Image (cartoon, rainbow, N blue to C red; front, top):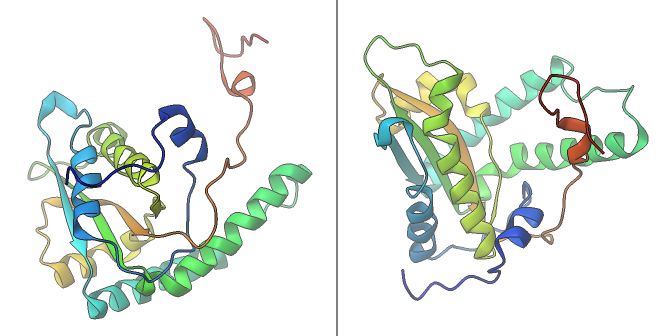
Amino acid sequence: MSDVQPVETDIFEVIRTQRAMRRLKPDPVPEEYIKKILWAATRAPSGGNRQNWRWLVITDPEKKKQIQEWYKEGWDRLVASGYGNRPDLPPEEAASNERVMRSAQYLADHLHEVPVLILACLLVDPGQRPDITAGSSIYPAVQNLMLAARALGLGTALTTLHRFRQDDIRKLLGIPETVETAALIPVGWPKGKFGEGFRKPVEDVTYWEQWGNKRQ
């Protein structure tokens, strides 16, 4: 793992250019790269430092194909519900939304061709119904993984559409009922270039001292 060297070392540049890379090459990713980004994931904070995350790495073609079919089913249902249909967006946001929809459709069609899928899982107590706070023990680790991947030149995207068929995913992969699948992360060498995605200005989404108070 120590032989794996980053292609980008400036943390702020990694953050700036780490966007969802949904068009990925089928070329294999060396196992030491996967271990490196998982190491980064497990440096993240978790509630009570319980570290109740688990990571399931999937490279088997048959399993990936089955997951892709379920994922595509979820995507089709989402699109049919009107997801992505946002006619009132200003031009810049509308262009970004269109790009996202095209790349998301591509991923749904080609997920099985991605060399590595990583399922981010969270152990939960029996009888517990996870709420929004449960995410604080898994999603920081997911972001660590994705930032580390970007630093190594690997593309990723945070997806959750597999949860439309979570019970089937559990059966396919032998995941216990007491484990939630928080994210499915495709990992591979990107077909396109890293770059800054559309983001609203910090000033537009930040309040000071009281809700609604903005500073320029």
